[in-house]
Length: 360
Image (cartoon, rainbow, N blue to C red):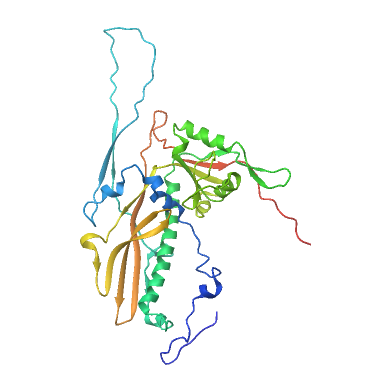
């Protein structure tokens, strides 16, 4: 990289952003990780019509409290022919009741190499290069980029949490095959049947499901066509499949040639904001507050943030953070007390991408 040097405290003569000259072909433009899972968890599609744990975990602003949820277990018995006997001894049946207690204590911040807590800090030596831009305005630009990276990395964390919360063993179906004429991979026409039977066996309705995945989801789009957009995925018009959500972080965690069937409202992203109410402080040289970051699809993520200005050292410091957990709905039915209707579906065929011959 060429070096620009200043002497005598002078600024670089002209400051131009690489994006202005090279467009998306810059390191910043290549950071196109997905936030699709966060979008889905916070979307109306996943939250509408249910009471949110986040609302009940918050006591007064800036404080949390535990929430107990009482849930009756499934009523399970069979029916058999019996002769009437007024003196018959009848087995008593008492419906089981479980109590689940929830609270939130998982805090996420930017980290260095996944270990040490990190904050954005820029000093006077860096700002010396911005002759035509006020230091505070330049730092705001860095804050926006830092927030974007924070949300993208948080999505990766929650994709991993999603995998950890799925207890059902993966199901395998022959989803992909090789076209005998072209050698290309194609989707098995019986895929919708595999999906509908899996959902029916779970005693669920396909209208209550979404499909979450990576490369496999993109192949479904090519097969069935894309309709109206929902998050980074798509609701396919007149499609036998549930709505599709694509996340580029999926394949790294779950593996390629797989996807997940998720019932809507099976998961909640429970969030608690720290710097609200009496804990919010907007002072001249430091600030502690909460802001809403737009994720798309009418979804917003509340993020705590701190900002500090040191006039003596001419330095700014900024850190976003969030208290959040992924909470799964309570499982159980008469057949399997651990059943929750969430399935990892994997392809069991050996179809591979066609290999072109070497160029002589």
